[in-house]
Image (cartoon, rainbow, N blue to C red):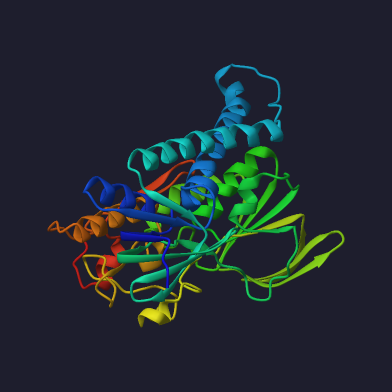
Length: 372
């Protein structure tokens, strides 16, 4: 069989884990082929995640400060919000960063292929793109395929039911917005749409917001947000029904209610993109949640296949993926390195912000460590 490309390293995924690995490997002298399903690099973080959300959060903060300025004897007219202009501003920010990644990639003469990479053998890939199939032979491979939003079981397919990507597209501002999931993504989007004028209801199945964080850390945020939004912890969505008037939602918590919303944002987590990669060809089997097990060198059970980022487990953070990508590239290049996650920072860019580094008290106690 003829192969269009033969390379030292094939990297599947052009997000923070993938492009960091590709750039570092190229800097260390390896020939690199970077395979990304989308036409642009950056992954979820740059294109439909971290960067657009922080851009919109900054706009929301300015809007809220303008509204609160009268407290300081400063008077403005009500903020006039131009959604089209705000979308354009966000796209310009994303575009500048995309251009930067393209420039860095070209400077390293990395081969880029657009399409979905699927393993066809222990050292071969088929990249299925718009122009057909391109076959690649490699010595080592790094999987950095990221994750996708989790959907609610039985959730109808309806344009009023959003995931985080839809919410960040800023197509409209619903009068009544239900956010299912009181984690970082849900609360950041609550602050964006709350500033833009939506009446916000947040539903969280656990008994606190941002469940991974310690309760005392989250409490100041909870006290602040409950002044502006309706917060329902210990509550789940029992059913969703699309009607001509909106989305009818049955909520089950301390009491059961049936309510109507103009839009529903489902932000209940993400699942790793481990399906459809041909992993069975390699003898690799993800766990029940779709994650791939790796060692401290980012190697899977197949020594020349590495995995990084969301694909290998929590926390699903861009900076963790970047560091793991760097480790994998250096291991492949023969450097003595390993991933030692002693203190991974996590931040919710809410108002007030919530941040923590390293183990939470709950995690420390679960490991049998004494917590003072």
